[in-house]
Image (tube, rainbow, N blue to C red; front, side, top):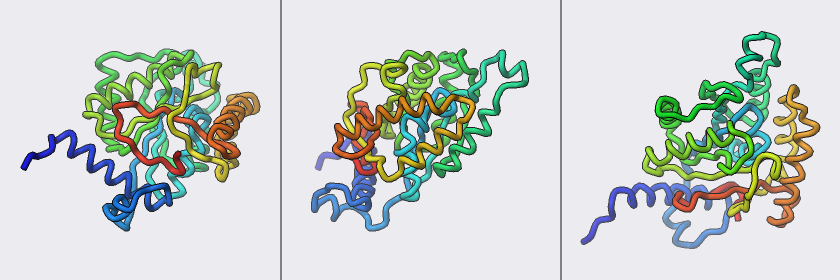
Length: 257
């Protein structure tokens, strides 16, 4: 009898776990999937990364809220604390860490920081090693990060750091990309997956407005236009769109199509 290679066994176990989540969420599934899945869904470890405080909330705050409502562990990992070196030295900058803490509390997520500086992101071996260790310690089942074709250098940097860690971790977790301020930051983004966020849109809005120093009236209006457009594509009031990396395990999302 031929044995499956180790990497296939690993992917299969992750897919079986994902199918369990799919059944528990009432998502479309097959009879064989339902028979295979355990009746008790495992608590998933979800990591959402962003260049700055506010990016994950704007890009996929609704999906974060959906995972948290279902009892999964969600960490929001920011590349930096939202302060340039000059602002940090001046000492009179807004407390963006406090704003992030408030936003995370609204979404029932944990804030984490990668320790870089706003506007001065570095992607080299030392930072890649540090980021890899930080992400590995979280033992994620699924990670969301910025789409790499983006006009902001910090967004591109964390996308590359996540990708490097994913490869070094043998593609063991599902990898999805999200969009922010489509056309202004993210460009050339065509979703492969959608999450209906209609029921949690108000919580997402509250989390975004927790970043009071970042002109939320302007940025939330732009991002809501994106979620309404994705909602039209998905057939709901509002939705968040994602691109699954083609080599990623196909992992069930909350209310995914």
